Every structure is written in structure tokens, then in C-alpha cells.
Length: 246
Ligand code: VGL
Ligand code: ZN
Image: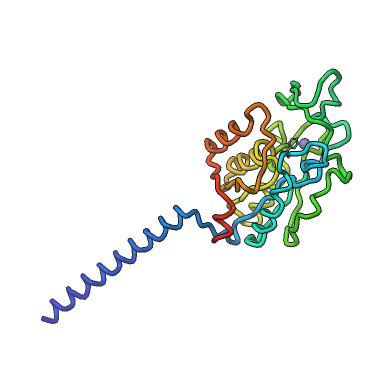
């Protein structure tokens, strides 16, 4: 009798354990399908190039660029770690069409590291055009990474320059801070955001792009191509609600 009781007790405990296990699994599945994410101390929000140059009135305005600002300000309240980037070019930078006689903005040129899209002069170091948008509210941001400051080389990515060799130091910074996951926002989806997210994967981070916190340039189908490449690189595409509701 005692033995039978004990066996029943063991059986019901095991059953309870299983229910708990399946219960938790079901909860996990539910959370994943609702895409509810809670970034913790090992996650960082990366705010890419939300500068005057990329917003109406700037030198290379991205359509709807200003719309990302309130979304990013909201997202920022959910993150312990925030990284800001600034496109920060020298005057006469190699990515400017004006540095290539006979070339116009949005054409391409072959440079030592490959094909470069040529842009209007933009985001020149120290100019008001290169300043962060004044409505951006990121009081808790911890570091600003500037990029594209080598005159002969562009850097869409916040991790490495266009030669895919020269590093900005961001990967080292994040690793030393024990950050393993990045959420990328800002301008422009198909250039600096996409390259930053893909290089984050390459450097071993989990990477999300928060789509409604970005806007694109979309030059000759570059936006669709960027989403394809990002998916292939394992970058996850989410909406801000997944975090704001979390
Ligand atoms: C960017 C073009 C040129 C960007 C920067 O921030 O996406 N695009 N420079
Ligand atoms: Zn640039």
C-alpha cells in the first residue's frame, strides 16, 4: 500500500512536470508568434545615421526620413544600451560624385575596393548637415560611432569600411560590453542599416532590423535586394510593436 502510494505520487509528479514543460513551450510559441521581445542587458539598440543630411532639407534626404524619429525615441526607452552612428565624411570624399570629374550623383564608379555608388556631397564632418536630428531624444545613449571619415573609402556599415577589412571598433566595443544582440534602426534601410545588420551577423551577433524605424533610399531596386541579402545573412525583420508591447 505504501509502495503503491509512492508510485502514484511519482507518476503524478512526473505528469505535472510534463504539463509544466508543455505549458512553457506553448507560452514560448505564443510569444514568438506575437513577436513579443524584451531586450535585456545583452542587447543594444543601434540608431544609424539619423542626421540632418538624410532628412528633408538635408543634402541626401531619404523619403519619410523624419518619421523614424518618434519611433526610435519610443524604442529607446526599452533599451539599456544604445549606440548612435554618424556618417562623417571629409570634404571631397571619394563617395561624392563631385570628386569624380564627369560623374553625376547616383551613378557609380570603380574604386580600389569595388563599385561605389556616387552620392551628392553629404554629411561633411562638423557641418550642421552632419548633426543628429534635433528631435532625436537619446539621453541614455552610451557611444557614438562615426564612419566614412577616411577620404578614399566609404563605410555604410557601422562595423567595417567598404574594403571589408578596416574595422570601426564597434564589434570590439560590443563584445567587451558583453552585448550579443543588436536591434538596428535609422537611415537608410537599404544602405547603412542593411550593411550594419549584415556585418553584425558576420561578427557573431544576433541581429534584428526594426522595419518601421527605418526608411529607404531605394535606388534601382536596392531595397528589395537588401531585404533578400539580410534574410540570407540571418537578419530578422521585425516591427517596433514587438518591442513596444513587450
Ligand atoms: C548612407 C548613402 C551614403 C546611409 C550614407 O546612411 O544609408 N547612404 N551615405
Ligand atoms: Zn555617406
